[in-house]
Image 1: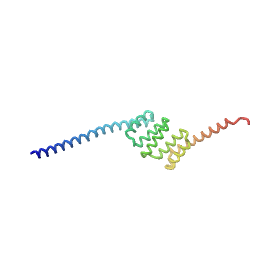
Image 2: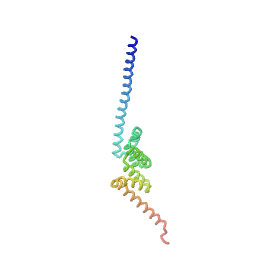
Image 3: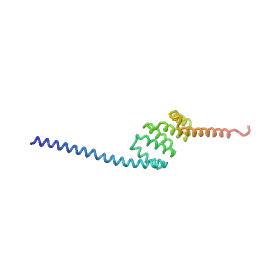
Length: 173
């Protein structure tokens, strides 16, 4: 009787252990579902602000999402766009590089880093990034538009230099 009681005790212990394991496995799943729903709502809110071009409001939400989704390439790209629109070009470039590291479209990344360099007057560097984007997608309209902006900035730079030289030359020699 003690052997069968002992066997019954092991079976009961096994059933209890399985029940406990099942309960343990279910609790995190519920929390994961709640967490996923909360993340999804946060993602929707951040995307809505981003789409409205309310970049200042979207950024804190995007940063929070990036903490819980560090490998989300599209999220890092959006952060880069929002930062650029807030004139935080160094941060934006870093976010674009992170997006590229996680697999985001290289053409878009190179083009946007090039545009950041235009706005910070690093025109030679901008040209390098835009040429890289153009080599990858020769007919990309956004890259062609960025080249137009770059050319206008270069013309303005030369015009300013010419004005400076003119101003330094005496009117009568």
